[in-house]
Image (cartoon, rainbow, N blue to C red; front, side, top):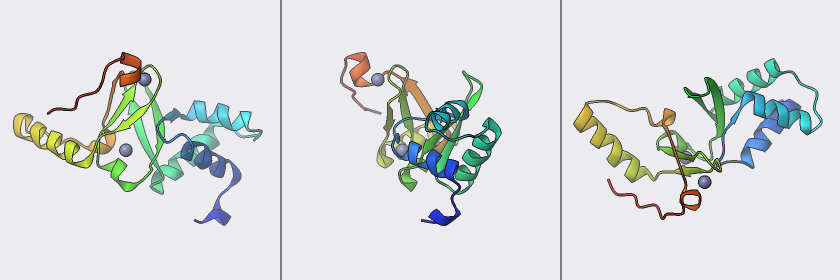
Length: 140
Ligand SMILES: [Zn+2]
Ligand SMILES: [Zn+2]
């Protein structure tokens, strides 16, 4: 890791997101966390750092049409760029769909709608099994 090149807020952002891999955060939420951790920083710097981390391939940026703001998620491994994510609206839990299931789904969409989906931009929202009180059955 190029730790020497990391500025402190950037280091903190990465550490924070690394320890919350199944959640995503807006720049404003990150800003509040950084302030809480005792750093002095402005929101523009947070945006700049987040975008740098996206460029470096450490974070996924997702634009939320509902709230009209961008959110950021730590990429646990490269496979996060190639599969779907389901996000629980209640507890914020992120579920990663398997590669095979994602490919099957993409093929189905391509065959029926002739539409090519970009999986890295695909978050589906709903309720997790814990919050809905049901078991999840994936069956395409
Ligand atoms: Zn993932
Ligand atoms: Zn939930």
